[in-house]
Length: 280
Ligand code: GRG
Image 1 (cartoon, rainbow, N blue to C red):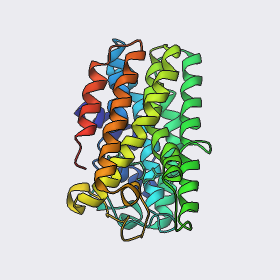
Image 2 (image 1 turned 120 degrees about the vertical axis):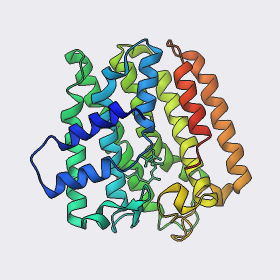
Image 3 (image 1 turned 90 degrees about the horizontal axis):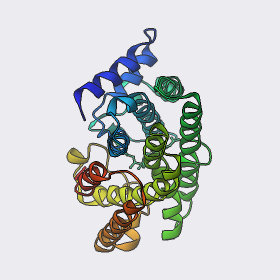
Image 4 (image 1 turned 90 degrees about the vertical axis):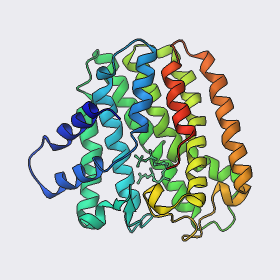
């Protein structure tokens, strides 16, 4: 990700009064994430002939929400992971209470930052609504809820796993695509991008599950906990080769759907190519 955007993230996460919570927020936000969601947003904007700078506040807000979800997901009450992005997870580097507050701080800060987008009031309202909708109780939080419930299910079906991924992963990967349309004032494209994002999330999660099996902790940068937690994943249900075939089929669906949007998809296609080849 470009250094200028990284600097923007750092400024936004450090601009408030000094506190241990603020330090923990900055620690987690600047902890080497791949910035997949900002890349998706910038590529959609480029496709509409718009400058990436227009998307900085919104991409920052989405990355803050994404980071909050990871901080909370790593907590002992959730996935109980000691490592995130190859470094001690927030509650290990600080403490549990501070990690909870850091997540809260990142989530609430996101709504302040997105309002700094240079666009009309109507677009700002749509952005705020999209952020709360995709991250919220009918979005990512619902996915996490299903995921926690599924822990007691010793025999989850593939359909249930897909439903979890649809909410937990797809919603937050769809968000930057939708926000790109909002910022470009191309509301008619939202539905097409929504469908693309939902499949992209399934593909991304399937890859994550594959990397959890074939990757090393050092490369993936987090605890490879699925097997340790006896978690049933798409890979354990479909087998490694079955899961890889599924990734290919998701990818074909996405590529075909790109024909339907009204913008140039050259840049977005490059981002998708990078994601497909990712090793961590
Ligand atoms: C706690 C409300 C709440 C939600 C947590 C995001 C999440 C839900 C759990 C994290 C675990 C997980 C496997 C999430 C699925 C989405 C996903 C693959 C996240 C990792 O995204 P990357 O690879 O992360 O973009 P980086 O570290 O690169 O930013």
